[in-house]
Length: 53
Image 1 (cartoon, rainbow, N blue to C red):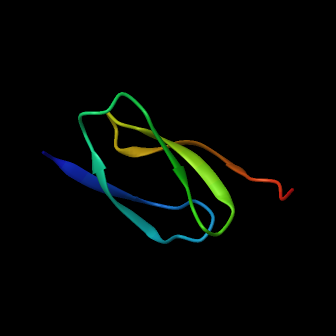
Image 2 (image 1 turned 45 degrees about the vertical axis):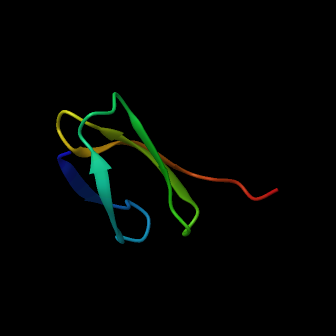
């Protein structure tokens, strides 16, 4: 199964092993940033900072 990686837009850490077979991927980084990935372009589509409870 083909995979790829993108960098977190918050801290820059590489998030690896994303599959090209999914329609949409949501990532929650430990730095507090959540982002969605554009599978066709293999890039970060949208991102936001999660608010603490």
